Length: 220
Ligand code: GRF
Image (cartoon, rainbow, N blue to C red; front, side, top):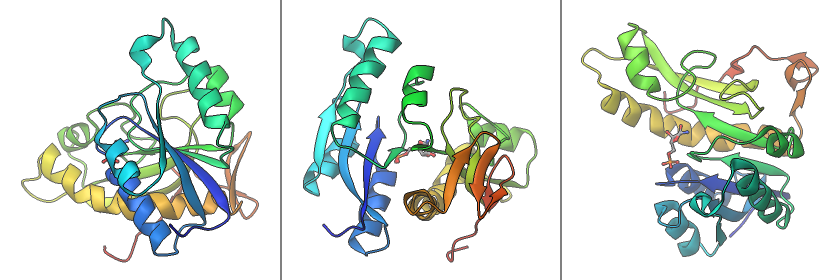
């Protein structure tokens, strides 16, 4: 597998389509780094198989085997640190992380959330956007801080809501945009162009808006 200089650890809990997007970007020479390890909290996550098929190291830290969130996060953090990643990519990783964990990897942890943050933090984002009569949904890549989905945005891609859209059709239209957005945003962090400061995400000495900069990939 090809890859630029940076090292990525990718955490997931399920399907792994965003992992697939990172691997395609890496293979195409479009990722400023390489995925060194894929870690799941669920042994049955389909994403693990995608990693194994691509010859990438995998690890499982099964949250059901730990008595507390703190104990789980401690083991997870040690596992991640062993791979010395520059950036840790959360891609459908369905665990809330403790403050200790997030502080340990401050500025290195990024997540993709299927809404135009700061709107619709949490779950059922597409349904909530539809219920509110929004004209656009989308996805945001943001730094992870201790508050759920509240970390400063890096980049976000709006996707138009169409007549008759359901949460399912909207999610399936947003997903291909996620796949372009996420590796692109990760590159900004890997190359140090965007970093986390006390006041938000910083790009060229400029503090970005809470949801990050709007980015529309070519397929739109
Ligand atoms: C994506 O929709 C992402 O926005 C959300 O979880 C989903 C993960 O999908 N955080 P996949 O496992 O990468 O296919």
